[in-house]
Image (cartoon, rainbow, N blue to C red; front, top):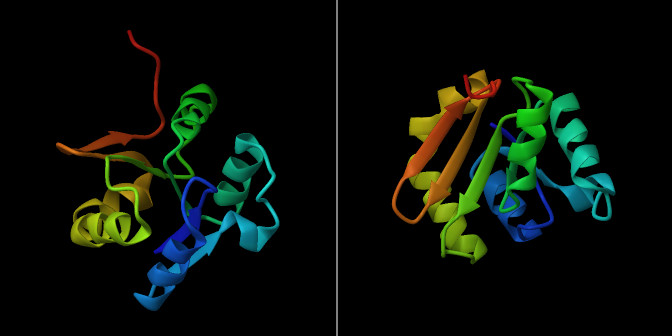
Length: 124
């Protein structure tokens, strides 16, 4: 799977994902460390990467744009270490891989995994 990790996550996590066989880069690798969220969002979509973050702003961008890509994976849990977040992702990636490929927001929190199919439509 192809990942783009936001500044809210350690570059070490991208390295670890690569060691597991994924195509993962950190925003720093694209000289986007100082970029705003919409610019990072566009880069992830352009390069067909799942955007991985702890920043909920990307969910808001998806809701406003009503687009199917890029998928966004958010960590909203107390495990903040790169190793802890990587363990969570590894343990659950097989379960959410199809959702991410099809277009989804996947949120890991302490109690559950939430998946919301894209595009997000306003409440009826």
